Each structure stands twice: as structure tokens, then as C-alpha cells.
Image (cartoon, rainbow, N blue to C red; front, top):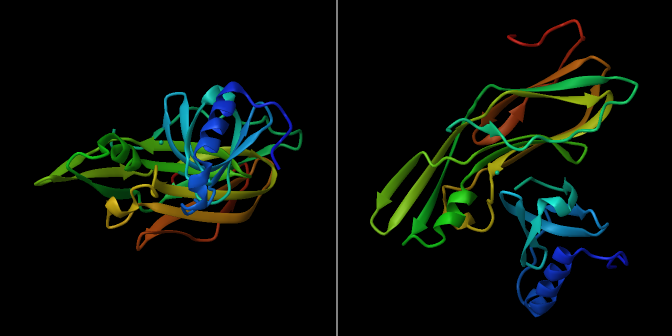
Amino acid sequence: MVSSKRFSAGVRRAMVLVCGVGILGLVLPAVVPGEVVRLKDGSTLKGRLLRVDGDTLTIRLSIGVPVKIHRAQIESIAFTDSIPAGAVLRPADPVTSTPPPAGGAGTIMVKFEDRKVSTKITIDKKKFWDEKVRSNDIVLEFVVDGKVAYTAADTTTDKTIYKGVEKQLKNDAELPDFSVQVPSGRHRCTLVVRNRDPDTFHDSFEPAPLNQVLDFDELSVAPGGIIRLDIKMDKGFLRTSSPKFYRSSTSAEGE
């Protein structure tokens, strides 16, 4: 059911676009929603986050229609499955977090045993050049209880391989260690390492786009405590051993 609350001007324009092409939704396969975007007017959009260009987010709705939304209109983004932005991954825009409750806070630390990742995408006769370059960006995100607590992105094309009318763009990245502070208690966390858009040009990636998701159903964080997650890449998949727990008086750095 559509919310009875008033839509903002940007969302009304998006709804007009959706209605204008609604008939296509009857003949085109639906896209499985990956994100739920809640707007400040109370309405929501469900689809896949394709890219972020400055303050503009492009979201492909569940019927396959791309819609552009300004960052100022967005209240929050919840990732329901996997997340779709210098050779070293660098932090993106700061993520605003809620101050920890009176019960205290702890730390979740992520350390990578295997840091290097690499992807290649093929461009034929320069078609969709800019779109494919953005698709080949390598994104790292850590989601805590449905909200992005840390994000970094590598947007550098490190090498262009010429093959006649075809060109392969190679992106190499090195995954950084990071830590996030969370309220004490139990948390559901997800680590994502993927290309910015692994879906639209899936067949152009060689051998395949990077799209790895590692879920931690429940991490119990004690006040002032530290949980360290040691991550490695095993045959292209994210793996982890059992989380390591530390007291507040114990440093996990350098171990």
C-alpha cells in the first residue's frame, strides 16, 4: 500500500516516471530489491543502489526503473541483502552514528589477513564507458544493525589493457583494517566487499564481478570491550575464524 503521507517534489517526479513506464514492469523481469531507502517525508523506495555521484544517488527500483534522489531527501538506507562507491581504499563520507547509551560502548575491529583484491571489466567500442568505470569501483562496507557504520571505496583504474576495439579496465585495491564503536549489547553485522554495481554489466566483468558478503548474526559487545574479526579471502570468498574477545584493558593492536 502506498503511504498516504505527502511525497516530496523529487519523489513525485520519480513516481511520474515510474507510472509512465509501468507497463514495462509487466514484461521485464523484476530486480530483487537490495536496499530500502527511507525519505525524510516518510515514504520509502525499494531497489538497488547503483551509484553515488556527489550528492545524487541513483536507485534502480524493483521494476527496473532508475531514479535519481538527492542526498538531502534521504533519512536512512537499510541494506536487506548485499550492499552496491589512490590504489588504496579510502574512507567515503563520514557516517553519522547515534551516541552510545548510558550502558557504555565497545569496539568491533576488523583486520584483513588477505588484503589485495582485483577486478576487470571489458568495454567494447567505448560503449557505456563512464558507467562501466563506476561499476568497476571496489567498495568496502561494514553494516551494523542495518546501518552503514564504515565505508571506503577505491575508484581508481590502475591499468587499461587494449585488445583492438575492446579494452579491459583493471582495478586493484588493498583492503584496510578498521574499527567501529557500537553500543554494548548484541549486534547483527555484515561485511561487504564488492564492485559498486555488480549487476548491470555482470557479463562484462572478467571472470566475474566482486560481490562477497559475510554475515555475523550476533556479536555480543561488552562495555569497553573489543571484538576482533580476522578476515581472509579463501578462493575468492570472505572467511573468518571465531571472533576474538578482549577486555578494555587489553589492546588488540599488533597481535
